[in-house]
Image 1 (tube, rainbow, N blue to C red):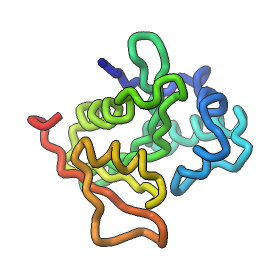
Image 2: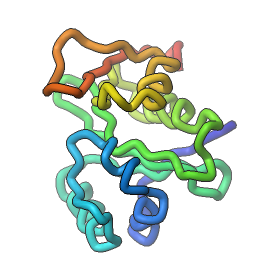
Image 3: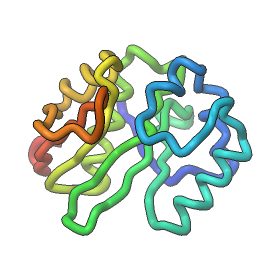
Image 4: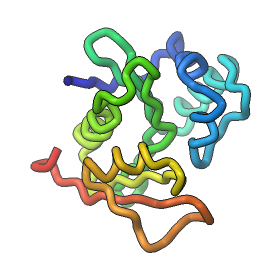
Length: 155
């Protein structure tokens, strides 16, 4: 499956509202939103990303949106990914893995990091499948900081 990442169009920013359940919302570490997620919150986040230079990306398979993620490039050249969400209709089909690989190809960092709750087993398995490993340092209790050295030849 070919997944393409593009900048989140403002008109699509509210997709996460439809895709997100209260249970899945609770699995986002460092979440900038409050429940219930609203279109107003997503549009404000879209504007914030534009101002601060981070990247909120829409993942599409063909023309159909299948997910989203947020990326911030750090001064050391690494990229941190977060707010990763696969649309309900696309779950269980390898979209999360494809999104992670596409993000690595897009930014070409040496290192990619992601934070995930210990209890979020599906996300942890997805990240492990594409080569992420838990680091010794944990940002806070219950949270796993995962990292991958990413070289172009492995993408």
